[in-house]
Structure formats: structure tokens, C-alpha cells
Length: 438
Image (cartoon, rainbow, N blue to C red):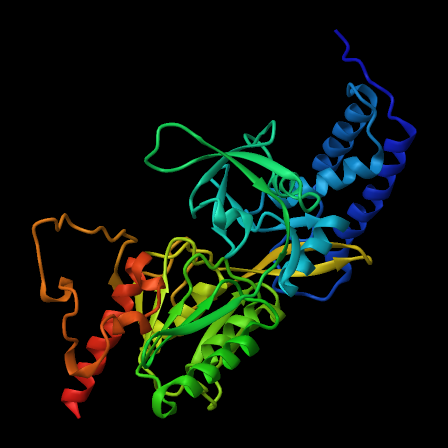
């Protein structure tokens, strides 16, 4: 039986005619070019695969149940190429390109959540502080199984992000599956304009500061330096006895911002270096002599939601022995993405390098292992119905002439955050040891 041959559509013929001369030129290029170290065939385009691609293109144009325009098909092809590389490379259309720019500048619309693909499942990397997602109780590693009426099975990352975006004030329903739970949780969130302040700070107790960085944006390092200077001004004698740097649930952000944050605590040595195929992917960043934080004792909190740029900072401080890393193992995103403009309003986000800590450790799929492991817990008050202490008596005398309840100077964060409390305890213990060794 003679196989049937379907004539090519005019559009497909033009498309194939455009590709084939380029392929022929690539095949001829090695003969015309000067000798190089490139492996034979590395620059050759596979003609058979191009032919197959054109045939698939033709079949869709001719037989798909709904008519699809050429532009849509070609952009879907680009998305497919990038989505199959790794979870972080992507083609960015006009809306997505603008969204990326907004997120690095600290203002964007949505529910305030960083998501990624793990094992083909839409997974929460971290909720951003003070957003609908964080207030609804979403946590790192939660799996989003439904957005509105759309199942996330087989969905692309960009499709999921687009579904979660919308007009401020509009509601969105999502279903999540959390580890250790048998049934999904149904949540309704109200979208907001997310104006994220990436830095928060306060004094946990007299002499002990708290610096929270929720993501790394263009202004993060300047904000962090101002926060440190303010805490020093408010501390007795202009000195801090210790500082907690909180990087938990920090999804990362701009590489240079992470370097600048590490530089606030380091006065010499390498912070991070990257390695990739292109010359401009080979980068190394070092600390400068200026250190606004001085030699203050430092504890860095990390967890499974600490990723990318947050891991750069934690890894640099750990390798340089500048602070104690406490918490649980970090996320393990050790790749660098470069955003390449395509025309005026579109872009390409492509993984171009892996980053390494000063000691040459790759974080990719490994994560930062804390020096002191402390899982997140909950403080519970024991049954004390039959216990009576002096402090419980009405009108009791306070010690050293201080008013009763003088611990009010301690931050309220400590009552609800076990890891943070342990970080403060460790800082106090380090100061005791330091004084005894003087």
C-alpha cells in the first residue's frame, strides 16, 4: 500500500523554507570557519528533526479542532523548549516580562506567593510576608492542586501564575495539599496590589537586634543598612550584643542584592562565584572592607523556604565562619537565571550558570545545612492549676527595684516563634562564652 502524502500548506512551506537555508548554512559553516575546539556537529542543525517539526506544525494548522494562528503556535513552541530545560527557564510574554520587572522592583499584583514546579507539581516555595498568601497560612512545600475551577495537573508554571493574578479586590479559591494531611485544604484569598517591603527590623531584647529580609530586591541592601544603623543608634552605647538575620521563607531575588547583604557582615574574602558556558557567566564577587554591622555576634535563620539568593548569603556567612546558621535545611536552588530582552516587551529567562559558596560548594539540589538544627515548634503552657509562685502573688516585690513585668521590653515575636527564641538564646550564650574568654 502506497503511503499517502499530504501537500504542505503555504504557511508551512514558507516556514520550512525559512528554516532549511539556515540549517544548510550551519552545515557549511564548519568548512568555512577557522579550526576550533568545538566538537564535530555541535553547530549543525538536525534537518530531519526540523522536517518533523514542520510536519507537526502543519498537522496542527490543518486538523486541530480549533483554528490556531501562527504566532500562538510558535510562542507555544518556545515555551515548550524552555519548560523542558529546568523549572526556572521560561519564555516571558509581555505580561510575564512586566510582572518580573515589577517583582524585582518590589510592587506587583497578586496574592503574594512564590511558586515552582517540583516533581511536576505546583509547589509553594514561600509566601511573601504580609500578603494574602501569608495571612491565609500558606507554607513552603504546600502543593497547590487546584486554582479556581482549574486543576494544576499538567499545568505550566506561567499558566498557574496567570491564573493567580487578577484585579485587586477579586477573590480566588485554591486547594492545597500539605504534607502529613490526608485531605486538601480549601482557601479563599482576596487579591491585592503587593507592595513588598523586603526588610523589617526591631530589638528583640535590650542589645539584641532582629533583621528580617523577605526577598532580595533592588533596594534591599540600602534598606538593610539603614535598619542596622537604626538599631545601633537605639542600642545602649551604640553597640549590639547580637543580631538575628532571618532568611526563612525568602525565595531569593537579585544576585547583586544578595552579595551586598553579605557584604554588610563581611570585610574580606569571596562571597559567591558562578560558573557557566559563556564568558560572562564566569563571575566572582568579594566583600569590601566596609562592614556596617561590625563584628556583632550573628545567627542566621533558614528553612525549606530559603532559596537562591538567600542561600548565597547563608552559604557565604557559613563558609566565612561569620555566623551560626540555625533552623532547617534550605530549598537548594543553586542556579542563576539571566533575563534577556526579546524586542521591547518580551523576554527570555534562561538558566546560564550555577553558583558556588566561597568554599566551592554547589547548593543546587543540596541546600544549606544548618550548623544548629531547630525545627519550627509551638510553645504550649503546661497545666499549672496547682502551681503557685511568688510572682503570682498580688503586690509581690520585683527584683532589683524593677517594676513587675519588666520583660515587656522583649519582642512579642518570641512568644510565637520557637526558632527565633532559640536564636536569641544562642546569641546570649555566645556572649557569655566570649566574656569568659576575655
